Image 1: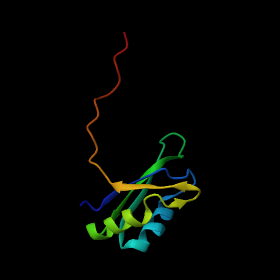
Image 2 (image 1 turned 90 degrees about the horizontal axis):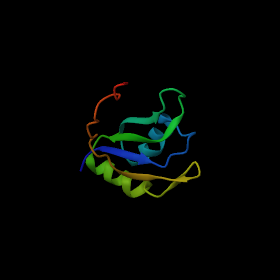
Image 3 (image 1 turned 120 degrees about the vertical axis):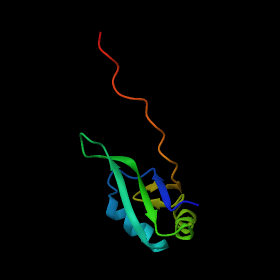
Length: 93
């Protein structure tokens, strides 16, 4: 199992340090990041947490998936690799 976790259904008030705090109960958190909108600096409602081992990542999934934090039931699972995006803007005619 991977050490990187996807965390979804976050409250818009949840910040990266909040994620780090909740996940540290299950082991060493090597990184925690809530994804923010570029223009408004508002949370997109999901983030990623990386644990130091796959055992700790699995423990975090078992302990936090479905748990309510900030009024929202979290979705926690192994992160999938980012799929390549098809590029750019369409040309203007």
